[in-house]
Length: 455
Ligand SMILES: Nc1nc2c(ncn2[C@@H]2O[C@H](COP(=O)(O)OP(=O)(O)O)[C@@H](O)[C@H]2O)c(=O)[nH]1
Ligand SMILES: [Mg+2]
Image 1 (tube, rainbow, N blue to C red):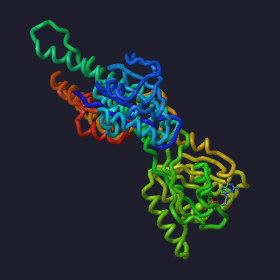
Image 2: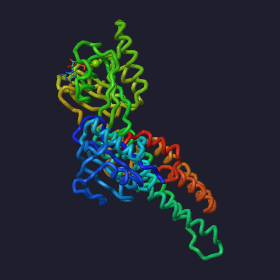
Image 3: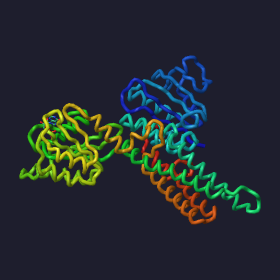
């Protein structure tokens, strides 16, 4: 039998109310030892809210509400009591201590959700999504994690697994009972089903790039020659005046970083010093750092000043960025244009994506659109589609794909159905790793340790 656990489930700090959650077979017994309802009743019905007082050594310390959920109809699948007390630090702690001294022990980080997973209330991807919802910092992150929590990814995986299982079981029937007159899965049918499985898995694999861009964020460097408007762009994207902006070339020296969301993409954005040759010792270090940050960036926002004639620095940077994942920002469109059509053509041909904007007056929506397109987010419905958003899920999908590819090539080579299915079974085992209950204890612990206490 599981121990009964308790924790403060609301954030630490002063607030209107705080929730203390208690889960386990003894939950109600524990609570009855220190809670008395105003009506005097103690046969609490599930899914009802009771008003009453919390007593410590016979003295009321707060008036609270108690909600009781009876197993298995609760978050964890066990008996759960939630006490809602006033949200002071001291009073909340006092109620928690009463639960502790009356038979519950303190929950570990993520232990409630872990129990929900163990009791079959949530699949692993859905449990992970609960963590993502808590961590979400943008609307896109919330939409994606909420869809995963509702089971979008689980259902997509189940669908693929179902087709695989059907193929495997039909083939084995043929293998096990060769004399019986069972309909043999025709090779054509098998090939069709396999290619369906492959398509679905490739779709999931492709979704990872989008999932990463939304959830983890893209390491991005804003680069360009001095005074192009990099810091202005950085501030406009951050929505705050974080970087110093002046018309003096060489103002920015330190690399400053901030996470922002543009369109549906999360950018781990760095503003850098304008890249040029300089004799100034401090600026020189700034340029070196800008170069380092440029080298490690996954995405480059290369800023040009359209109100100035281009120079060698612009051309050198354009040449350097060729072939990288980049968006060209042609800035200062509110001013009279002096940049040559020749450079513009060069930019268009070497960096496919170009956004015209004024960091002063706007154009950020256009950048958002370019980013959504770049990460295929315009093809996805974050609120409903199955999207892979972490390395654990992605690596299992890749392994499953390899095994399915192998199954396909066995089939092409004319191998018998059981050999094809042998590869399919391996693919199935890889997919089971994502969402099934067969996931190793180590991985499960790792996932739930990232949660906060009380969740
Ligand atoms: N008119 C106009 N001025 C801009 C724009 N973006 C930046 N600036 C000005 O250009 C100068 C250099 O900007 P800054 O952001 O410091 O450039 P950085 O050196 O690339 O970081 C400042 O005076 C800004 O106010 C823009 O879109 N339009
Ligand atoms: Mg700057």
